[in-house]
Length: 227
Image 1 (spheres, rainbow, N blue to C red):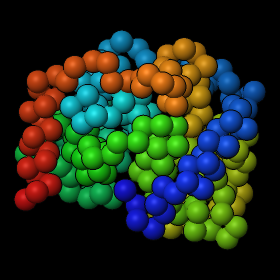
Image 2 (image 1 turned 180 degrees about the horizontal axis):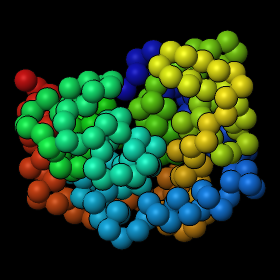
Image 3 (image 1 turned 120 degrees about the vertical axis):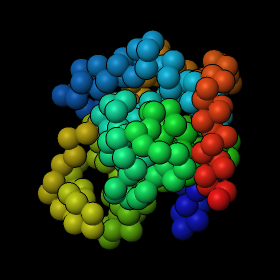
Image 4 (image 1 turned 120 degrees about the horizontal axis):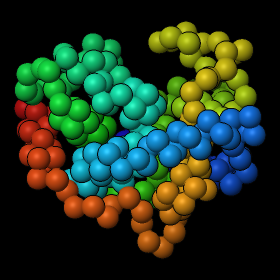
C-alpha cells in the first residue's frame, strides 16, 4: 500500500470518525440503496467472492471497486474500466501483462487486486477497507491545500460537498462527483443487512471457498507480477 500515506492510528481514527458522523445524503439514499442491493445480487456476489476468497479480499470490497471503476460492467477491467478486449490503455497501462486478450473478468480482476497489493493486505476493518479504497484511487485529494475528503470514498455522504479531478491532473473546486463513493456503498450494505459491520467480531465477506478456476488465475497473475 501507499508509503506516502501509511495507515497510522490517527488516519484510522479519521476514517472511523468520518464514517460515524457522515450519513448518506437524503437525496442520494434511494440511489445508494439500489446500488448496494445490485452489488449483492447472487450472480454478482458469487463472482466477487470467487475472486476475493483466493486472495483473502472480502467480496464486498471487490464489488465496490468494480462498481467504482467500471460501473459494475463485467466486460471491463477492474484496474480502470478499460475494455477486456485488450490490455489496459490508461493507468495502470498494459495490464494484465501475462496472457493474451480478450481476458476474462476474473483473470483481469485478480491481476488488478494483486497489482494493488491486496492479496497481502490483512486489515479489513472499517479503517483498513477505507484505506484500501483511497489507495486504489490515489491520495491526491490529501495533497491539496486545504485537503478535501476524497469523493471516491465519501461522495453521496455529508463528508463531501464539492471539488474533484475532472481529468488526470485537472482540478475543479466547483465540480461535484456524481458517482456514489465507496464508503457510502459500504454504509448502505451495512444498513441493508447485506454485510456485517467490518469492525464486528465476525468478519464478513470471506465465507465462500475459493473457486479452483479463480485460484488458477491467481497463480497466473502472481507469475506475471514476478516476471
